[in-house]
Image (cartoon, rainbow, N blue to C red; front, side, top):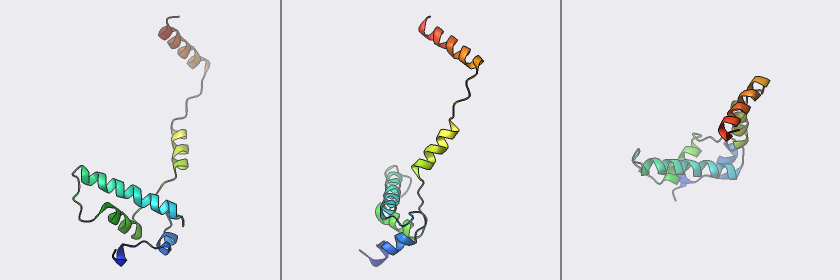
Length: 103
């Protein structure tokens, strides 16, 4: 393996996105490699290097990022919050349920 293809612990610790976590760094590069491979399989890009090598280069250049699933889940939960149930809404829901179940 060429020296330039290696990702050292210093590279991981210096990367703000993975916050010094080797696991996060591996996840970031693996997700990027899968994405690159999928794009190549679908014919959108032509590969000149292996997907993992491309992902490693992007990581070392600081072009990869990762989002916390917890933060995304909270944002989605806020986005799809149910409207407040009023007496009018309850009556509509009850009528719809009666129609659906033939009551």
